[in-house]
Image 1 (cartoon, rainbow, N blue to C red):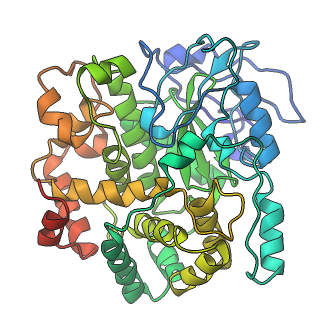
Image 2 (cartoon, one colour):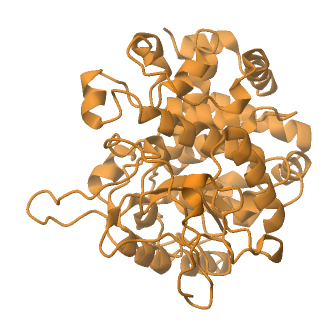
Length: 455
């Protein structure tokens, strides 16, 4: 983990505290920028070979400089007032910002294809409307009777939008049942959040939890950590300037939820990504050679289960509400969707964020339409729970970015020496009991899942 010296006073002078020896020499100070002192970050361990192509979400390559400019323009970047770690970039060096499903690939320069053809923008940047704050103000001034007209810094590639235009209704009944289970127990989402999430943590407390978690996974000094309040999601793993980078939304960093977030991003995405680099299918060519299925929905389903693992009440609220919201967005305008969600979420600010996630990529949100990527969470969760008794979970982690469906076939080809297993998966008996607890808590029916997902 790499901390920012611009963080709260309790962290001053501890920018690379506990960093692994290979990173200790990288603590030299850089010039100040905009009044904030920035330090260089230790590099993560070198990862061999080119990784697989962009995971679901279709994140495209972009230069760090261009990414930084676009993040600044769209408001999707890290605010200067928040904790972040500066990432050094060589003059003109190119990096990749990828969806979590393909992390933590260490990007390498690659020649442009097609004789200097124009690159597509990073998806993480391109899908965030550059006028989102202005449209939010207009929407609230109109008392929710207005459909935002979103603008984007650069056009989102049609190939990406086409891939996620269609919403699924396959698990709508399960999503609604999960939502109702939460509301029956807690009355409102807001009460559920306070009761199960606990209080919001200060930056000092967040850094403390992150440091302890990194020590548990043995990856101190390998991941750059940023704190922000500009993410649509609670957290995101990406590669920025060739370094694995975890951005955490301050509004989601709650007392009892933060470690689950770290199990999701570090314990699942990062560790499986590191293990993936050791496998013969670490490249796109290798994935074709071994006829691998897509990493998703397994990747995000597994990570989402790990988010709620060990909670007393492991409700799958967020995955369920995202699934439902996207299904409704495909049929409704933005304003109609906003009204529809009021039955589940009273907080207008929270509803706005869910609607923006579901409608991102659209320009005229008065039309039905969605960006369906977020349905992958519940989809993956239900598939894994359906087959949990036959999945070798430690092997699923060790083999890298593979589907649970490929594990048995690939185990004889996998390189298992020095692979990492998440610390919370070491006690497999306890782990399996927790999965059973998740099934019961969310009122999932085994026979129903078997019918929905036959072998």
